[in-house]
Amino acid sequence: MSTSFLTEKQVAISAVRRACLLTSSVFNKLVKNETLTKEDKSPVTVGDYAAQAVVNIILKRAFPDDPIVGEEDADDLKKDPALTKRVVELANEALQADLGLGEMAEWGIGPGPEKSAEELLGAIDQGNHVGGPLGRMWTLDPIDGTKGFLRGGQYAVCLALIIDGHVELGVIGCPNLPYDPSDPEGPRGCIFVAVRGQGAQQMTLSGANPAPVTIPEIAPGALNFLESVEAAHSDHSFNNRVSTSLNISRAPTRMDSQAKYCCLARGDGGVYLRMPTKAGYKEKIWDHASGNVLVEEAGGIVTDSRGLALNFGLGKTLGDNYGVIAARSDVHKKVLEAVQQARAAEEEEIAKAKA
Ligand SMILES: Nc1ncnc2c1ncn2[C@@H]1O[C@H](COP(=O)(O)OS(=O)(=O)O)[C@@H](OP(=O)(O)O)[C@H]1O
Ligand SMILES: [Mg+2]
Ligand SMILES: [Mg+2]
Ligand SMILES: [Mg+2]
Image 1 (tube, helix red, strand yellow):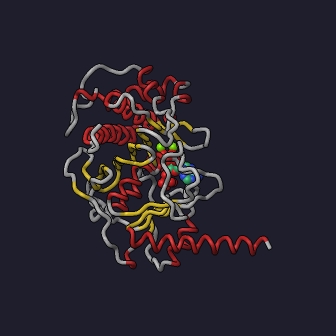
Image 2 (cartoon, protein in one colour):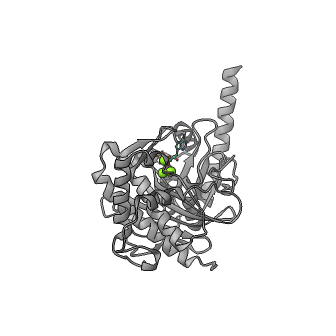
Image 3 (cartoon, protein in one colour):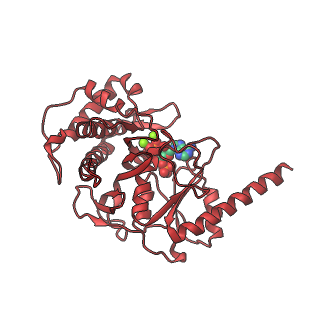
């Protein structure tokens, strides 16, 4: 196995790019009955299923022995023949699209025979690995920020390679993110790529113009928080308390998905802070793995609210990690201190209210 991960990187970019083309084309045609509600009440669309099928087909062809920890499974989809038919059409269209930059026909992509429903449903279910501390595995979020996707906002296709519990490679495709943050109305669509020890890059959705990204020094007055749109996913009032204590006057940027990590990596924002809103919720590895290596390779630090590294070797979740803080190292130190003070103050208030 090459430690430069050159093939892994090219295959992962190709898989994410094809999934992004699929999701952006499906958005305009999505109809209401093409979305299901999962057991945890969260939405899943034909886009999520078809994107997971496409990425898994490509990964399994290139790396047949690598397990995949994917967000979705095909159980509910199999009960719905109309939705299955749609997923099969979308996935085949994405797999059969002409070869683009750096792609090779031997990866099983480009014009060729159609995959059957059985093959594609099977591919979705190949994302059933449970994770763990040892060996190589991929983790996939076919659409991160499905709610953002449905409202036409930010979402991301996120794929990462984890080896022995450490994220070595991350690719994030953001079809709706402006390529140039200084031109928010300009062309949209970017792919972010990071390989451990090799830096981070941004390129267009077609893989053109790769350019390094690093978190620049941001003057304290220009810092702002990057946080979830959904109040149920991260504690907005806690973020407000922390930003006030840091004298941050700029309003937070609310954005769905790991696009937040991408913005941080290219200096568009300054602080990623995500604190749980309810006891017991454990963050999923596919919601953070790609962003973790991207931010670290762009010169940032990522920890939980206690200053501990995120642990990607515990299974499908980050286990006992509590909250996530990501920022350039100088900013991270200040935010971590402020978060710990804010938590202590909150606990004191709760104790007083109980007394
Ligand atoms: N209660 C709770 N707390 C924390 N996180 C949760 C919670 N419920 C869901 N999720 C996960 O949040 C993922 C969406 O990412 P974001 O929170 O960054 O975007 S959003 O603004 O909230 O949409 C979302 O990812 P997707 O399901 O891929 O969209 C979920 O995995
Ligand atoms: Mg989901
Ligand atoms: Mg997600
Ligand atoms: Mg998802």
